[in-house]
Image 1 (tube, rainbow, N blue to C red):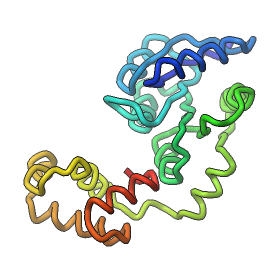
Image 2 (cartoon, rainbow, N blue to C red; image 1 turned 45 degrees about the horizontal axis):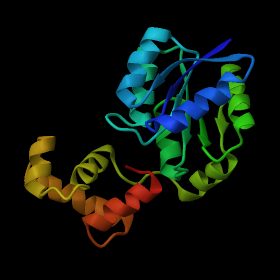
Image 3 (spheres, rainbow, N blue to C red; image 1 turned 60 degrees about the horizontal axis):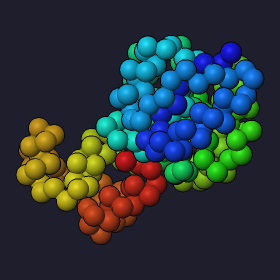
Length: 201
C-alpha cells in the first residue's frame, strides 16, 4: 500500500480527496492536516510515502512545509496539489524538495497515477504549468527582497518592517526599491501584487 498524508485547509476538499484516494486499491490515506505545521506532526507520526500538500494554508504554507518535511521526514516524497498554478510557485516548490506539482482541476485518476509515478522515482509536473514556468523565467527577487516585500504586504510601515526583520530602515528602503524595480512596479503595493501573481512570494 502507498501511504499518503493530506494537508488542505478546506475540510470539504480534504475530505473529498481522502475519499477519492481511498477508492484506489493500492493507496491508503494515513493522516490528514489542516495547515502546514500540522502536516509535519502528522507525517512524523505516520511516516508516509507521500505527502500531498496544498500551497495556500494557514500557519505554514505548503512550500515551507515541503522544505521542513524534507529535513524531518526524508523518506516522504512531496506532491503539491494547488488551485494556484503560478509559475513562481512551481519553481519554489521544486527548490523546496517537491517532486510533483499538479493543479486541482486535473481529473482524479491523474492524481492517483501521479502518486504511483512519484513512488517509482519520477517527477510529475502539470505540462501547462511547466511551459508557463519556462517562459516566465526565474524569480528576479533575492531571498531578502522577498522577505522584505512579504513583510510589507500587509501595509506595514518601513519602521515596522525594519523592526520585524531586524534591519535598519535604510536597508528596508533599499530592498523595497530593488524589488519595485525588478517587478517593474510603480510602488511597493503594486510590487507585492505582481510578485504574488507570479508566485514569487
